[in-house]
Amino acid sequence: MATVPIDGTRGTQVAVTELNDEIRSLRQQLSRFSVEGLQKDIETLQGTVDAIEHRRRIPERGHRAAGSPLGLLFLNDNLFWSSPTAQAFVVTITFVSTSTVLTSSDNNYIILVNATGGNVTITLPPAVAQAGRIIEIKKIDSTINRVILAAAGTDLIDGFGTLELLVQYEAVPVVSDGSAAWWVL
Image 1 (tube, rainbow, N blue to C red):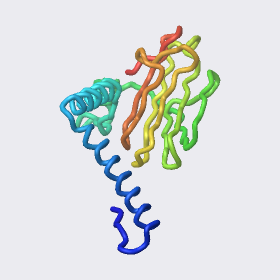
Image 2 (cartoon, rainbow, N blue to C red):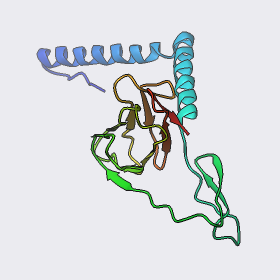
Image 3 (cartoon, one colour):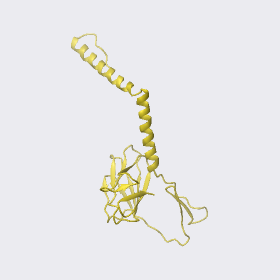
């Protein structure tokens, strides 16, 4: 907080100006605490929470049925069964720390994103001719920086142009419908 000096007219004027600026700033902050302002903030926060709840996919730790090398698997809020005759399935894992545009020829399946250097945007390839392709994006850092999953051109991801991952270990798997959309699994 600014203080008014005892001596010097110029110093007093500067201090009074600083105090007036600080009072104005505090009044602006107080105005946000009106009933209408708080209601608007609550509605905004509720909308954000609803959007995050709709989009988030935080996978359970891989779980297999006890005593069975293959069996019940839990992945991304969905229940999958594996077969005792299932063949080994290997996926490509890519580490990314800068914004990246994926192409149709990329062989990415899982993309682990480290956003410690700032927000990172991962742009999906056009959904056309990608029918059934699955890509999973996961934020692996604990910073407040965002991992933004963006659709190419006019494509959409569950009806949105982008999705954001906000917390460490949050993940979103998407699948192409082969036309103009990616869908969150």
